[in-house]
Amino acid sequence: MRRLTCLAFVACHALSSAAWADSGDFQLYKLGNPASTDNANAHFRIFANQLGAAISSFNLSPPETLGHSGFNVAFEYVVAQIDKNPSYWPTESGAPSNLLLMPTIHLRKGLPFSFELGTKVTYLQNSRMASATVEVKWALNEGLTYFPDLGVRGYGTHLFGARDFSLTTTGLDLGLGKQFALGGMLTLTPYVGWNLQYVTATSNVVDFEPDRSLSEAIEKPTDDTGVFSSVQIHQNHNNRFYVGLRFISYVFEVAAEASVINTVGVRLADGSTVKQQVLVFGGKVGIDF
Image (cartoon, rainbow, N blue to C red; front, side):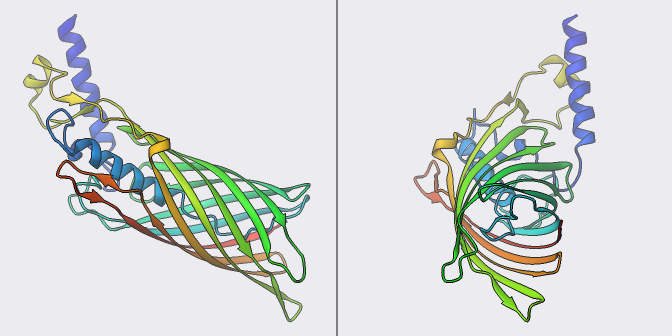
């Protein structure tokens, strides 16, 4: 019975490894075994902070809402420039790109009292992962002639399809914008904002010797396996600053946005601290109903 159990463990691991072979998928064993590598847990935390910053660092809309009967559907395309150091970015590819490409479908629904609900689904290109976001926005001030629109937005994002780990982000942002009419047919809305992001992540059991022989795996199936220390949400926050521009003509909408995110510093075993900066650029086309 024990032999059959071990064989099943190895077979399942081999099949899952083969199934998750896209170049952009992550292989956490490359971060190092925390039982024997001093910086392995720090590397996992750096990786989680950067990935969390990238997948939740765009909203592509000003602080104003759609109105209680409004509805918007949009296609968005976002590019995040990340630190591709393999110590912190353990992709299947031996030479990972420093760009994370993310096509997105975004739905928003206006509610009474200047509230708005939204949801979006984002695909991480060259991988089998996707993220889903739920958001709520409240415009404290909108539509006044001599004052800018002011709004707050809260959101939660969860990553799906990652084999070795789970990652969730939450955040709150504060935005300012002002709509200008151009020729009676077009409105132009520049906007800026600040976003505080929180990241939490946990790892599954990771096999740190995936290339060992079948006989070795059957004999000692749980040797050289382990988990990383959890990334706690209250210890990991990123500051994001963004600027955007939106055009509306009749029911058609076009927008562009740029963000810079400074991740929280993570201390390594030698006493040095790793801080990263993630740049995110996005655009969208949408329709209002």
